[in-house]
Length: 364
Ligand SMILES: [Zn+2]
Ligand SMILES: [Zn+2]
Image (tube, rainbow, N blue to C red; front, side, top):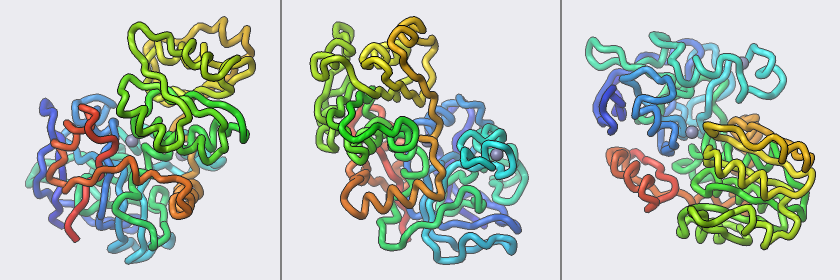
């Protein structure tokens, strides 16, 4: 079928919105009419030729939409169901079988490397094959093909257009706090970098009942947003600021938990230095250099690398939607909607800090 997609070509830093062919969903596939899809930094990096994603490709991995058609072996969803798409996983390896599908042994092939090239749900432009299956969805298009593993049915009274962001960026931040660090009520936390992931972590810390939530960022505007979402304090990071010292002025003795979203070596070290004895440090982006191990030892700290907020998407995404519907997880405050064809404008606006989380919408 003909679909409108944003295609990333090699050597171009911008997306090209054009008509391409999408192949049939096959017996295990789920054809979804995309209603809204979020923009994540991973899309931008992949478009620029990083992340090992073969180009040309249709990217997009925070899709939400309505099931249009399912293959004969699909029993999980049916046409007209509302769904959020998330990362794909094999369902057969030890991590998948023990509730840790975000650490699936096939994670790279299924989500980045187009290990399913040529299979149902592939794209073509005339004679030319265009890579798809990005995060098992390639949802920068008005239609996408996913599978049961990465299709999450959701309640129909929630605003479907914006729910896709829960499938990656928001679950990464909120899950790192709620699922991985799970701070006890009344404990204290510092969150380094309050872009979409960090702001989701702030909201997660509110859900957990943290008594101090310190946000750290280089942009004042983001600190203000963090405070609106429940951060108790903001620390403006800069070349002359030792953020760990600033945090210790706010929370004497240091915080119980620290979460770094920046992937910067210095930020990782400051996060560790801001922790109280026996504190917990989590991170979701890798720095070029590791932190000082002796600090970790002498303070008895724990360190956790975290992928996708340790989410079990079938459980966690509906939970986040329920919290949102109860006004306890206002992730809609992060979102700015753009018509799909404004995708390149949205990337520019996000990079400049003008908007936090773009979501592209399609005319119905
Ligand atoms: Zn697996
Ligand atoms: Zn993402």
